[in-house]
Image (tube, rainbow, N blue to C red; front, side):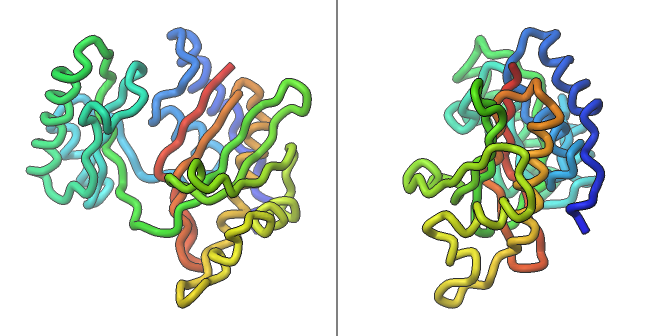
Length: 242
């Protein structure tokens, strides 16, 4: 069972964080955030950081179409605002053209921003969107949050919190506490969601926060939560280090 999985590779996560801190950054780049999550067994998408159209095509072939292209920059907060995201890219030609278009958009709209490259990422099929996050409180220590994801997390505010460590029993209670929990069980013809996969993510996020004290904030939003038995996939990850 997943509850008995190893505690995660804190050393691997710390190596990513230390490199960022050496560069004077508190926010991890997205591929770095994925790496930290991956070191604790969280279900991140297949991805690769590339610096040329040819590399982008090669990586897209290895990942498998369709893919997403995202600009990677320590200076850009909202990638879409500068034309730095292209979804549902389905061919070598579209990848090559998309890479060049993103770089052109960023040069035109954010000319002073540093660009590390472009992230080629597996495009997760759409599903029910949920969010799992965490903060490190000065008094209580790490606390984990769960709620509906995507735009709903801000619009509805239907979320719940637990102070770490969060057990599988705690995670199940968190899931049942939100007002919209019936959606996860199947509502008006929709299929039940993979609550076991969601519980696993919540517990592993708690474990990450317990083991890697340098992480001050973590936000996994959205997470695509598929039908029962089909798992989940993290689409975006944000990590702030202290």
